[in-house]
Amino acid sequence: MSEYVLELKDVNFKYDNAPSIEEPALKNISLNVRKGEFVGIIGSNNSGKSTICALCNGLIPKSIDGEFSGTVKVNGHDIKDYSTARMSQEVGLVLPDPEAQLSQLTVYDELTFGPSNLELPREEIEARAERILKLIRLENFRDRSPFSLSGGEQQRVAIASVLTMNPEILVLDEPTSNLDPLSTEEIFEIICRLNREMNMTVILVEHEVELMAKYVDRFVVMDNGRIVLDGTPREVFSHKDVFEQIRMFIPTVTSLAGVIDEEYRKWGRHEYPITLEDMYEIIDSGKE
Amino acid sequence: MTNISMYIPGNSFFHKCDSRVKMLLLVIVSIMAFLFHSPYVCGFLFLTGVVFNYMALGSRMFRHMLTKMVIIMMFFLIILHGFVNPRGETPALFFGKVISLPFFGAYTLEGFYIGLVFWLRLSSIILMAELFVSTTSPSDLINGLHKLGVPYNFCFMVSMSLQLIPISVREATIINSAQRARGLPEKSIIDRFRGLLPMFVPLVVSSLERMEKTSMALECRGFGNTNNPTNMSDIVIRKSDIALVAVSVLLLVASIVLRIRYGSLNVTDYLNSWSDCFRLGIR
Image (tube, rainbow over all chains, first blue to last red; front, side, top):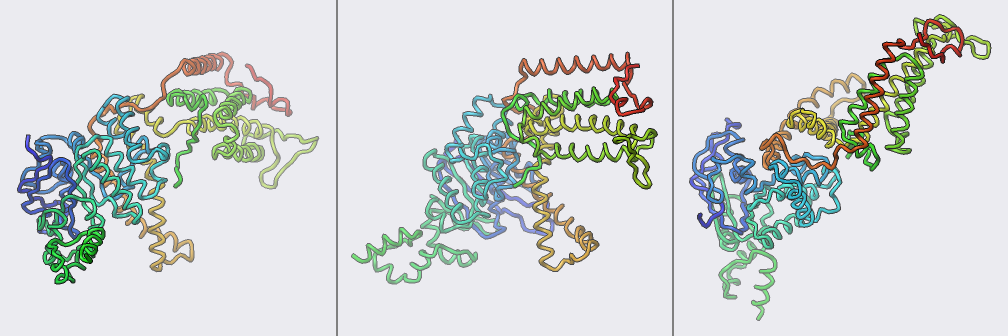
């Protein structure tokens, strides 16, 4: 068994349902993720972020048609050899539209739906559902219809319903794209807790770069089906030129630090700040 | 968000009943109601329906859509039939007077009798259906169907469609508002009908897209892995359910025997006064 829980090697993929688009969605992608890592994938639209998500549990190439080449291994198992149902016990995938992911009549049914499809014994399913209800703080919604909840609550239910499958890796494809700032932070908090407290490997695709910088261990920056940058937030955001080239924003504090670069070097720092807290710290130390 | 299912949550005897028992009850009542043409038998079924509903829902039953339907039908069937039924011959006397309408003629005893029996028949079936839909949660219904041998995928499809209706309605409203905001005419009724067509295309497209997303999400949660998912419902067949089934089956058998022995107890041809309507009519 290798040290990586997720390995993508030389993966190419081109969607069949968009014949007008000549370019493949993914070009020679190689990516390795360690157990317990919190990886943030960023990039402009159509850069292939969502395609990577669908690869992780075998939706591509099994359910979504296209030209696929390369290998994707989860815990050492090649995704081609297993069904999506089998893979979903190792990789939980949360999609962008919370409402479209929900299908049951109550929140509780929603949580038990996944494991009941695995034909687990009822006691086990109930224990899992109770645990997840508590973990995601959904106890009060238990018997409500998921369609009567707000967007943020729905997304929490969607995350919870994936967690009852007991996955080791959680993959979230723009989970906050339809949510207000408050719910967005709530979702981030939950994801962060899952990562820190339960040592769950998390792969998060998002546009909220600034918020992500606070939480993730590693950033993967994609452009046009390729990985252009890969490293810790600090490493990644020090490549200001690359971000300009792919027309993406870096956190405001980081670009501010870039502007006052001269001054900044005098303080004896070589790495740019990426969150407000970092900036405060630097300013304080600069004063001394 | 409104739910189109007419389920009213509760904790009564009928709420805890297996949905198959309630289905059987509905079938038996429907057969019995049409076996006899007698206000006594149909009235008995009607009263049973009222009592059962009251046991299950209490006063909430009077707010139920189907109860209201029964009351509206009473006016239509009993009053209209009296005037318009083609078999009506004997005019009914109201304190010695005949009531008649222009074009339709007098209110007849035959019309009253047929209308009454018909109302009782239909209402007892409607009341039984009300008992069924208001005490069976959609997931129990799906469960019951599955236990009856309907394939799981089909049951799931039914429950998904139930969920989709309110969502589609909402989506249709959004599309309609968007098109009105861009100047879709809406003055006359014809304009409104014309407006339906441009609404239809985006609605179908968005529903299909939505279904694709949903199916992906379902697959991520292991749907399609099995045809026999773990049963999560608390409902089991109890002794009292068996007793209820036994009593209703016995009643059905008895009424079939009675029907063969004594006929349908129809007295339409022998009506001369109000009291004749309530003769037992044994042949």
